Length: 368
Image (tube, rainbow, N blue to C red):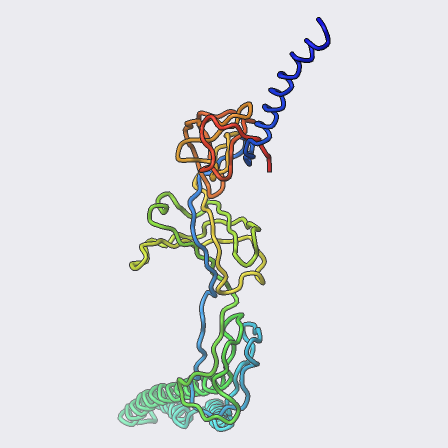
């Protein structure tokens, strides 16, 4: 064959190749990922918020003048730390008086009752008279009188002891009450907390029940709110993952600690409390985020990004052509879904811009 004839044959073929290459080059690019195996998670979404366990308003149990007040706002205090001191001088004067009175009472008790001394003498007289009566030298009538006197004195001693014990018991009660009043002049932190408000200052004269300071508990509560459609099956002990908005995309492991049994009447949402594996200093009141409560898991499942699903279909890229594939879905979390049937491990599926592609389209696969 002559060179000119060969050239005439090759030129059209080259043009066809160039056209095909140009056509392929103009094929849109599709972001794809491969179907992979992993652990499928059946999880329900929830919104998360963090709050302090409680706020305590410290109030004075007694009236008095403030001598010293709580540390500055923002100070962290420990249980038992002194926050407010009231003037207790008058209370201590009364306390000293009662303690002195108790010591005097104990001294009198040690000396014995006057009735006890009279009883001892009467018993001696009765014993001597009894011996004389047995010898025939003491009148029987006088002996009976002495015996009656002893019984009277025994009754008097018993009554005196009852009165003495009652008086001492009353004195001890008054003393305990006074010591409690003195103790109430010093107001301490009931638990580890942070001072958020100081409501009394040195020199202030406060009444009983007056507010002194406000404390924010150091313990934090992490609560997850779920819609009623996702609440069924949630139970204490289940695993969860939490992402706080303030800490970016970092996820923290958690466990359902408690499930509150009733829904908020206004929102119809249920609340569960979570134990989150995070350092206490990161759990700031007001922090918010999202969570997944894990209801079940399947190991070795086929997984795809949840955003790749169009209902029950996937856009599969095979030999550069888009195929609309109907699949059977399994477990699903916020980010991933299990494909129970209809896909094969390693197949490429389109993950973004699904509305731009249709079955039969030629595309260039671009893995992320």
